Each structure stands twice: as structure tokens, then as C-alpha cells.
Amino acid sequence: MTEIDVKQKVLAANAAAAAGLRETFARTGTLVVNLISSPGSGKTTLLEKTVAALKGSLSLGGLEGDIATERDAERLRKMGIPARQILTGGSCHLDARQVERALADEGGRLSNLDILFIENVGNLICPTGYDLGEDFKIVLLSVTEGEDKPFKYPAIFSKAAVTVVTKIDLLPYVPFDLVAVREQVATLAPDGRLVEVSATSGAGMDAWLSLLTDALAKKRAEIPAAGVAS
Image (cartoon, rainbow, N blue to C red; front, side, top):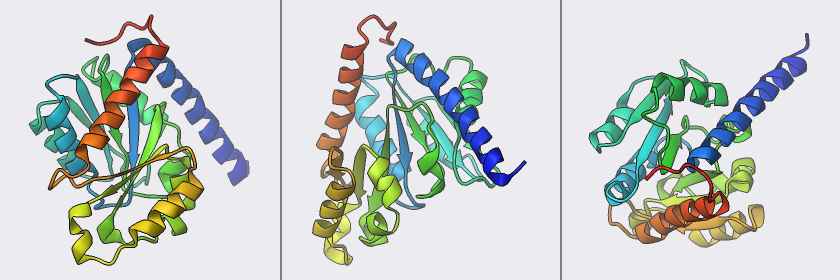
């Protein structure tokens, strides 16, 4: 069997699992977002601030992908929401079957939520081609990384429905061409959204939170018969 055959079988199995997950999430009315970025972009910090703002009005949960350690899941659990760490043991991305198993192992604690956050392994390449049954992918880019990521890794920026530029409170102190990033993202994803936030200062957080709640409302409106979580 050639390497191409193996890869096609893996992707086919992933697509089947993702389709099953998507059906499940449609029944429960759960909005699922798949956060992708390079390491250190601030994904977990943004989720902590998001949970702090929304957990009183919405039921939230997290699946955290990492090669090692439970640290990210522990951070979300400390915020008072259910969270499970998926340790990949070296793999650079999550796949749909790992998500299936994690949800099953949780025995319903991560089901029937309003929003399920999937924080993928820190990588801008490997997670791009794996459907996890999410409603949409979100790619994060911190200003401390420099502005060249959308140019060097166009695939994820073209597939992500939302680009979040993080740590904008540091813009006065680092070289980062925000205009060039806006232009490149608009070229790669003409129908996508770009949000600029600082989880530290709170700048842009209202737009980020509105994006999530609007997406949840839109999903619920499209499946009015779903047995949604309260």
C-alpha cells in the first residue's frame, strides 16, 4: 500500500467521524469552534477571558489538544467549566476520532453545551486539513509573532472563517504591519472576519464575544427543532 493510499484512508476515516460529530452538534445546537495557531499566540488566555465573560449566560466547555501536559485543560477547569485534555503523544494536530473518544469518555459533561471550544495543537500546518465537525475554524495570530504568518501559511488563513489578531496592546512595542495583515487576510478569505483583541487590556473583546454569540444564535435559528441546551 502506498503512502498516498494510507493518507487517503486516514482522511476518509476522519471525514466520516467529523460528519457524525457535526450531526451530533446539530442535534444539541452546540456551536463548535476549532482554534488553530502557532504556540504562544494566546489561545488559552483568550479562552479564559471568554469564559469569564460568558459562563454566567451560556454553558461552555473545552477540548484541549497538546503533545504533553494537562496544563491548558486545568486552566479552563479553574475557570469553572468542564474541560478535557487530549494528549497526542507527538502528533501535531487533533483528528475527529480523538474528539469522538474524548466526548465519549466525558460521559456527557461536554455534550449539550452552548459552545464547545476545541483548542488545537499549536501548529499552523497540520490542523489545517482535519475537519473536527466544527462549525468553523478560527486562526489566531499574535502581534509578537510578526506579520508574515498569513503570507507563509496561506492555507489556514484561507480556510479559517475568522482570523483573530491577539495581543494588540503590544502593538506600540513590536514591529507588526497590521495593515499588511488585514490586506492579506482579506485576499485569502474574502468572506472571512478579522477581529483584533487584547485579552489583557480587554480591547476588542466585545467584538469577539459578539461574534461568538451571533454565530450561536444563527446556528440555533437554522435548527429550531434541535434539543438545545439551556
